[in-house]
Image (cartoon, rainbow, N blue to C red; front, side, top):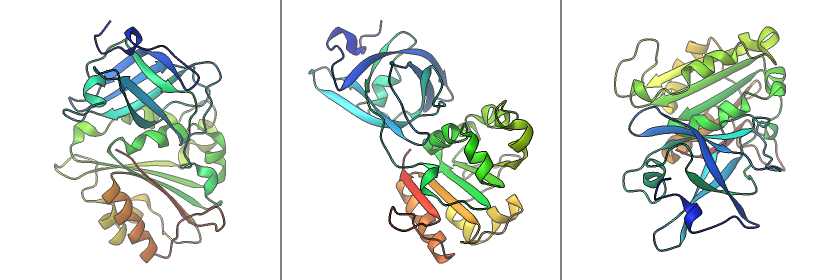
Length: 267
């Protein structure tokens, strides 16, 4: 057991449980995925997030929000994380291994869900870095594949090694729930900004929207009438992308007013 495991100093209560890491994958020295045991009664809608915690050396707790990667019916909860050097949470997380423990708040939350968008011809899922995570859960929803004729997943990273989950994304086209009928709808467009990677676009997402590169790569025409957008990633990308979409006639979806865009800051 790692010395950073919280079980030695805290037990679960009515607000959180103590869960075990059952699987861990390191994509690079800065990126990792991990699975936690899933407590009975933990429910979430794809796109929502959970708050995970550690106990610090002084006995206080530090919490961070993570979108679920896993499907709502999986027996585990999977998360995708960047490791921040000297970060209170992720530096401890990076030292953990299978069998170690993480705190989990009992209730998922968040409104970054597809049901906030009206039906349309196209669903664009735009992400930088670990902002990819909620889309991997969202794409497990059969109704998403039924509602849209085209689904375009855009993942922008700095270096090719950061293009995580490529095999899992490819496998979505053959998913047993929807592959035969809908698998052809999914397009995956990787984007790398700091090196040339075969098969990947180059540039920031807002610029690729502005000059038509993304639309051309997907073979689609973007318009407020037929295009719907989800944006998740670093805050600057999220804001710049939303501003660009505003210039193209799109607006934020609100409870009282349907729109074409939902967004969430995430790394």
